[in-house]
Each structure stands twice: as C-alpha cells, then as structure tokens.
Amino acid sequence: MFFHVLTLFPEMIMEGLGTSILGRAMQKGCISAEAVNIRDYTTNKHQKVDDYTYGPGAGMLMQAQPVYDCVQAVLGQIAERREQTLHSENSGAELPEEAKKVRVVYVTPQGSVFDQKMAQEFAKEEDLVLLCGHYEGIDERVLEEVVTDYVSIGDYVLTGGELPAMVMVDAISRLVPGVLNNDESAVTDSFGNGLLEHPQYSRPQVWRDKEVPPVLLSGNHKLIEKWQLEESLKRTKERRPDLYEKWRAENDHC
Ligand code: ADE
Image (tube, rainbow, N blue to C red):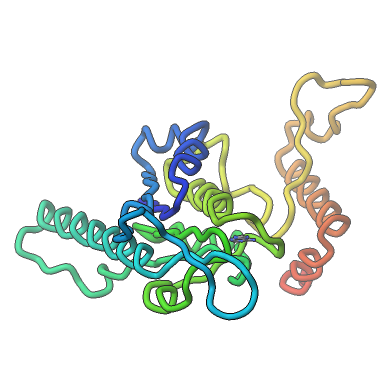
C-alpha cells in the first residue's frame, strides 16, 4: 500500500513513520510512505503558500493553487505507476476507470471521526493521499475540487494535520498483510470484535505478590478463551459502556 502525505512539514512525517514496526514494513516493501512538500508547488516567487482569510476573524489560510497543483502532481504519478504496473503484467490492456480512482483524505477536525472500521476500509486501497492543513486550514474551493473524504481523529483541535495523518497511517498500515508478525496479530486486538482486549501477562509468574491468573497456566485453551471473553466484557463495560451496549445489542443471544 502506498501512502502519500501532502504537507508543509515533510520531515515531521518521515521522522515519525520511519521507525519501529512501520519502518520495518517499509523496508520489507509491504507499505511505502512519501511526504510531499506542498511548498514545492507554489508559483509565488517568495515561496508563499498562505494568505489572510476573507471576512472577519484574523488568520492565515493555505491557498488553493499550491494545494491543487500538489494533489494533481501526486495523482498523476500514481496513475503513471499504475499504468506501468499494468503494462508490465499484461501488455496492451487499458486501466479500468475504477482503478483510476484514488481517495484523497483531508484530515480536519471537521471530518467524520476515524475508527477501526474506517481503518479496515482504507487498508483495502492501493494508494491513499492524505492532505494536511495548517494555520486556519485550506481554501474551501480547492477542497471541493479534490477531496473525497473528510476525516478527524477526535473532537479536539491540533495545530496541524500531520499528527492525525501519522495516526491514520499507523492504524491502517498494521492491517495491511505482512506488516505485523503473527505474534503481533491485529485479529485479537481491541475493537477487532467490537470489544476492548482482555488483560495480558508475561513473566515472572508472581510480581509484587500479584499472581498471573491461574487459568492462563492451565493449558486448557477452551477455558482460557472463555476467561478472555469474560475479561474483555468486564473491561469494556467498565471503561467503554457505549461499546459494551453496542456489543450486547448485536450479540444478545449470548
Ligand atoms: N487537524 C487539527 N485537528 C485535527 C483533528 N482532531 N483531526 C484531524 N485533523 C486535525
């Protein structure tokens, strides 16, 4: 999967994504991430990309031209790469219209709230373009032209879209086949089944007089699974009653 993060702060993105599991996944070739500097596309001779907003309320807004040209350039490169892949696999074939579509996500507090279900949906894409705003945001006219999805990471306001974009790249990447090792499986995670994950324990068996729950040492897989579900339910009910009620409504035969 290819992530294209359009930003005024490309170093922030590459530093944030280059380490640990995502860094390893990039080296393995399971995912690839590029940070594209929107400033490189401005036609302003002083490299300016922002200006004052019209109307009352002071503030700077990212202007339409550099954002539009940057998005178009990235979409052009994606189309070219897809054409090349197609030709190397099957000479002469035309890229179907559907395969030309690329989702352009504007990360903004004014979007739908990102969750695990959305991450699963985005993980099916071959390319994802993430557009990061700064200052007061981006001129509405260019958003109308290029954006397919408006996504927020939560009901609070950050100084820019870079951290939200990194949050999304992380959550989506770990669902891409090959990114996680078996022992880091995404299937049993919190939200994998709509519940929070059960507690986990490692060595030593006793720490500060606290023992690992004996059922986990029993070797009885059926009993362990039953215990894990009960713990998951208990934890979800306590910490996320909203999720618990939803799970109960969907599983009330249990
Ligand atoms: N930019 C600023 N705050 C944000 C948020 N909560 N989600 C997405 N993008 C943002």
